[in-house]
Length: 292
Length: 129
Image 1 (spheres, rainbow over the protein chains, first blue to last red):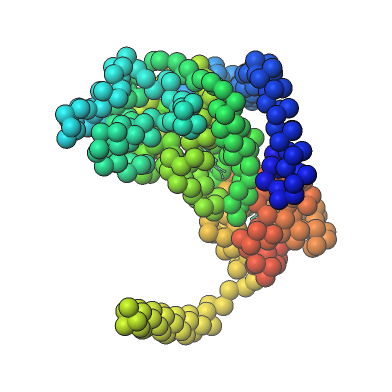
Image 2: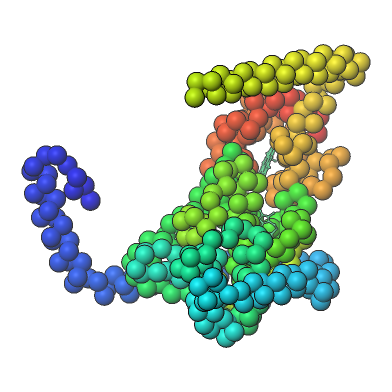
């Protein structure tokens, strides 16, 4: 850990420890692998159990509908809105944008060959070469970058449209998020820590509003369960008057508790998305969706 | 380079002056108005408690006379009977964590969302409930 010491003795001790830990590490690699996989499995179980106990009259798979899973009154209205969904145009525009031919003759389909079969269920994933969490939105911009195109703005607009098209084509698929190695586990743990940490002048954790008091009214807002949060993204919110991504919402929730919103698609939010999506493992992709 | 800098600082001081003077104008007229309809401490406390940008207590508490109240916290009623000591009530608003480490009620005073004077006004109002 503390290898950077000027003291020679510490150096030697440090290197010895390092060598030791490397050999122990290789022996224990398999054990470790299975142990962090187990930890995550337990986390998922605990998370689901919490909500199935708290909302014992609601089928747990319904949580893909966000707040409308627990609010029978506004659910009716919402189902009517979904009939003439305000995001339909975005999906169409997203599909069109997806078909764009880049200056080099390639297009998004070269990056996402299986888009028509549904790919959203595998996002976010952990890239074991770059050691980072890759979300759909980041992958879209990485595709552009590889093909020498300018990146799109994160959050709303064309990038959210493309994301909506990708979700739409993936509807009905079940979230299948992988945890390939220990680095991925670290990213997961960072996201988990974020979720449970108090922040902002008003001192709220995500878990306060979306776990502990989920189902209560905060002023006129009914608080949705965090289980299923990522399935319906991106969402068209009438408050926004447009489509926004999961990270747009993260920033809004941060602002609401007077915390500094963080960079969209930055490491913190991507790790948070990784944790949140892992918690919703196995649930159905049903985005895009509409919210009030 | 230096010229540019001078220009910028001139612009800044101009803006500062302009806003400063407009503020003092606004204050003048405000004091005139408040003299006519001086609010009582109780009213000021209620305003602070109801305003979203300040206490926003209604987000969580039912309060007689409040609209769109949330239900996360207990109804704020019979404060005098339940909080005979002003200190205890003050502390609940200043930093609810002192009583319940796991509370979700924001530490309004400790995190600077409300000043001590503002909390005092809110406590005065609370005692009317």
